[in-house]
Image (cartoon, rainbow, N blue to C red; front, side, top):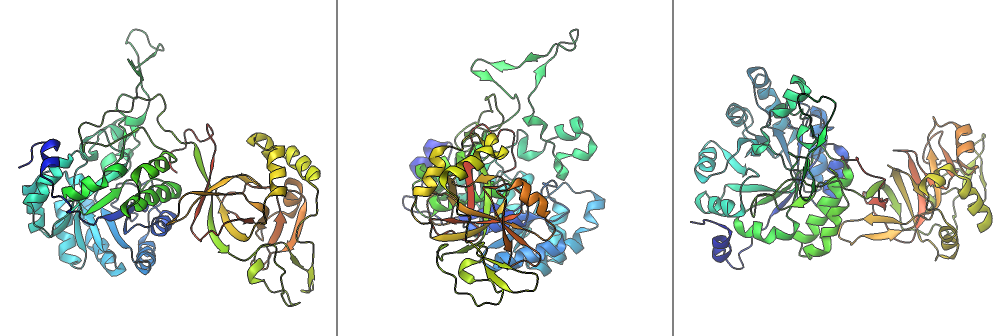
Length: 528
């Protein structure tokens, strides 16, 4: 039997590495799409009921069916959580819920309550049963007892060491799978069983029913009873402390050890987090699982919002967050690719005279449609000199806020090689013409593009006057892809969730993520 990590290291089977499933969080449809796009083997999600992350977008019943269909189309499995603490009022709705999950085609239900387990096995026998980490299964005898009840996978408690997992693997049936968390937030309470939230934020914010307000992450001060209004900072020798805030987990450099210990599925935490977090984390773990050097991808995990990293309990106590900032992040997601065209943005468009969109120029401002439906040619782009463009951008209030528009930016655009690709994106945060944007794309390293010839695809409800006043003043014409839409040439993309297109010098793919380095401007943003 293994007693510590030294014994584990001495006795692990040389060369015996288990293939591991990469399991990603899907708090909403966009997160699901990012998980699939960047290489997850499976995703876990929740419905509007019974999930431990009620603040996530989550899925209604019809949404679950659509999500399962989408994931299965791409060869990705779907596991649905039903792991809150169950009262009789909760139990009453479980038979219909599990039956719905089975009808939707979900691959497994993640449960912690014994009654929920029994109901699921009875009413939805096609669903695999995964034991939630909320059950705190930490020994082989408990795992085997759950196995006898129909559980096919145990999500082990985050408090287990690597040696503990290896010991469990030796003593449980070979076909009982082990799932373990490898990345993301950790809780200061055992297996997340915390009572602080409902005590400090009210009964409607119970952590064990999915409404945690995360009071352990708040910054506290000390007040002496006879001196109200005189708070004292709580500090330690090496700096400030959030007292109860733990570090975040990062096991990217130790995937081989997890495999050798007998882990079948590695799980990224984060159903309450945004699409960029999912894309970045899944992308990094996918590259390392596929054989790339972990050191080359560690920096990627620094680009998302996180507390200081540790290896959790796998190699000893994880420690607490002793930094003066609860979260660190210098990168911001600015867009997600919704369509990409490898055709040249400068090539001649041989469209017929009828007002039909040109496949190689979709979204480009090179045609407009008159009121009578006749198509006419317009200038592909405003023929302005460098000085005029520099003057206009310098006068743009958004450029002043950014503080990094310079002569070098504008001159660089003029001198750069021809941009050979056109891409259409959904904007999340503002980005500027010529600004270097980093691209996350599956199977490729991170690379940079500089957008030129940005076009705003204004919808039918957009105010034309607003477009004229706040943009460069060039209305290029009707959008051939949107009835009532308008194409406007702009210097900056800054309308959240609206679509823009631009030229760049690299081929992008639908679903790719674009981000920008903005040190000091992303503090306090925790969901991406």
